[in-house]
Image (cartoon, rainbow, N blue to C red):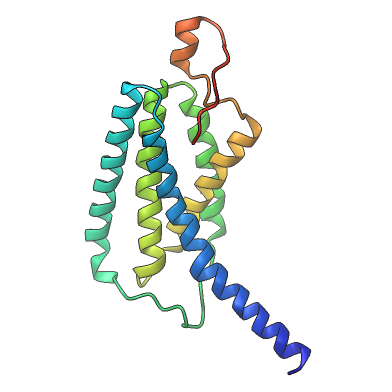
Length: 184
């Protein structure tokens, strides 16, 4: 076996691993993060908003599923061609994710949990369905979902305490105070 053949096999193995293991795990991870946010709610208001967000996200996913049912196909890991990344989808999603988390700093903590759970549930399940089972794969939607997750994480890198103190907390105390970090 030549070095070129070894390199080709290694690259193919890496590509298949990323395409059919890593990306689906990341998309499924969004759903797990949403579920863990519901389970880690600090009070009854956040728990109610989180559960409502979970069910609303599931309803949106079911609507998306029924709408996309005609394009359903079995997964095809061995098919040549693979996945393309829509760069504008990633850029738009990154800006949207950053802006949404910034905007949520003006909401109460319960609303933040509810909206984040709704988004993560719907986006994670819909992207996973599109990626694995839809004929078109909807690259813009998948790239936008991954970009939005990236934008939200970038927001948390730049402003790590932004979700710790919300508008409601500021209104109650009149000033910023320290809380135990939320585990999302």
